[in-house]
Amino acid sequence: MQKIGRNEPCPCGSGKKYKKCCLAKEQGNAIRLRDESTVAKTALDWLSSLYPDSVRTAVQTGLFTGLKKAEKQMLDELAPEKKELLTINIGEWLLTDAKIAVQDDVKSVRALLLGQDGPSLSDVGRSWLTALGKRSLCLYEVHQVKPGVGILLKDLLFSESPDVWVTESKLSRSLVLWDIFGARLVQNEGEYKLSGAVYPFLREEANTCKAKILRKMKGLDPSSESVRETCCGVITTEWLRSLVISHSADSAEGTVSDQLIDLSSDSFEKWAEEPLDALGSRSPRNALKTAAGRRAVVELLKTFENQNSHHVRLFGGEAFAFEPLWDLLGLKRDGE
Image (cartoon, rainbow, N blue to C red; front, top):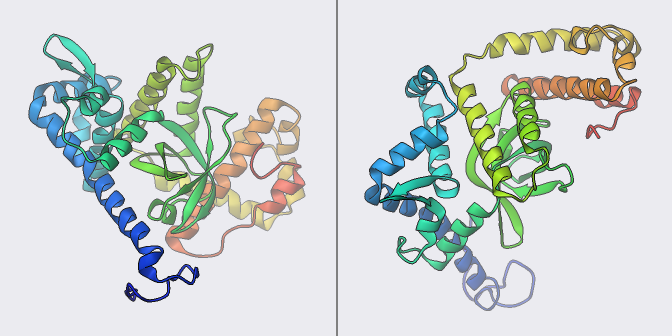
C-alpha cells in the first residue's frame, strides 16, 4: 500500500491535508491496536509470576472441573493447532472469569488485574481489559458472512437480543452460514469485535450445549453472576470435551452429502413428503404440524446447508441452492 504524504490531500475526501485530517486518528488507532494486542500477555505474565501455583490450581479445579481424569490427560495429546487454541482460551478465561487463591482468600483475577496493586497498564490496555470482562461467554450462530470483513451473529441463549454485526477479518474467512461457536464480544469505538478466544462446535454439539445452559438458566435473572457462571462453565466444559472426543467427521459429512445428492436428483415435493429418520420417521411436511417438528425441520435444513457450505469451501464445487426448499416448506431462512 502506497504511503500517504503528510501534506497530500486526505484520502477520506475532506479536501484537507492528510496531516490536518485523518493522520492523527490513524496514528491513534495504531497505538490502540498495539496496546490491545499486548495487554493480555502483560496481564498473564504478571499473574503467572506472582501466583503461579494458584493459576495452575484454578485451571485444573475451575476450567477443567467438568472433565474426567482421562479427558484431562487427553488434552496433553492434542494436535498442535488445537493446543494453540486451548492455550488462547485458557488465557482469556483467566482474564475474564477465573478466581484464584490469594493468601487466605479467593479473589477474582479481573479484580486483581484492575486493582491498585495490579500490573502497570496503559489507559487503552486497561479499557480493553475492562471491556473484555463485561460480557459473558455466549453461543452465537452465524447468519451472514462477508469474508475478510465481518459476520452477523445471533445470540442463541438470549433470544431477545438483536443480531450483532461483528468486524472480523480473519475468522470470517473460515466461517460459513449456520456455524455455531462460543465467544465473547467486546464493544469498542462503537463497534463489536471478537475478543480472541473462540469455542467452535459442530451443530449437534452446540445444540446440546445450548439445551444444558437454558435448563440451568431457567428462573434466573439473565444479568446475574449465576447466569454468567453457567454460560461460561457449560460452554467451556462442552468445548473441552469436544476436543478430546474422537469425531467421525468424514463419516458424518458423507451421510449428509448422500442425502443432498438424493435431494438434488428428486423433486423438492417428493422430498418434502418422504419420511426421514432425522424427523422420527415423519416427512418434513408432517413434522411442520407441531412446534417441535418445525424446529427439527429447521435444524435439518440448517445442518444440510452448513455441511454443504463447508464441503464447498474445502474442496470446491458448486453450492446447493437451498432457498427454494425453505420457500416450499413455508419457512423463513433465518429459522424464525
